[in-house]
Length: 276
Ligand code: SAM
Image (cartoon, rainbow, N blue to C red; front, side, top):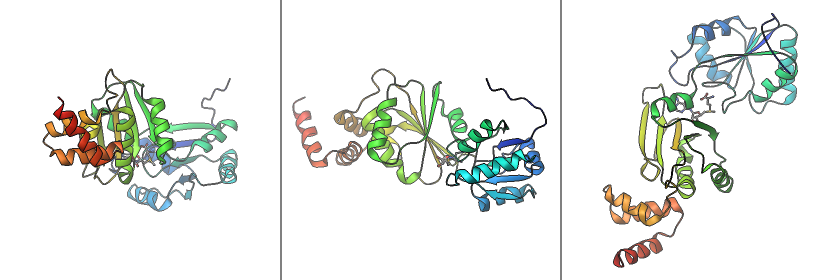
């Protein structure tokens, strides 16, 4: 059994920093960042902006996911020599889709106390205003390769509650198309640029979301409920037409989403309508 409690020995702090709005830092976070001997940061240039804003003069050292095991061990030795240090990431909570996992693992193995100074995280912020159901399942970034992504989605398609993902704007379309193919046309929310000037929430079905977006994005998708695994292209076309999209555009969009041939889909759709 492993148990940690305060005994005055040195600490690895995981300090949450703002996800956009620089005012979103706690009094405690700012104090700890001033008190520790070193701050390890993913991108030191980026973190300098925050530290300057709060007049924090603690030495800043680079630590990221590509840092070697040797570098992580050096940090552990530095803590074991009696120095409190803090780990921060570019935004939000370290370790959450950000560097730090390896360092925390080594710290625990070396009986170093790990203390989290809590604060913002994009997925929690997004979920609170999404009005989607508990439980929430946070997956971070989906695999970028299509086949791996599909395999991943296949494994979670019966999960109930809310599925939450981080996604880069240039990959949003591919990701939503994979979701439509595997999860069906579910309710979804895009939470964009949270805590920043152009913060925006978009609620719609996956097939209808605006996908030409910029900025930082959290994508939230309704978990499995009966009948929401709908991927019937004809129903998706009907839905779009009902919502005011021209038939030719609706066919084009659905073909793109489901990876189907546009002309064949159009002909089959017309044939189906004739027989109805
Ligand atoms: N550690 C961070 C956290 O606790 O949320 C996440 C870091 S991860 C490398 C970066 C991703 O988080 C972005 O690509 C985006 O999906 C999401 N993200 C971060 N800040 C955001 C914001 N202000 N608005 C929306 N999404 C954000």
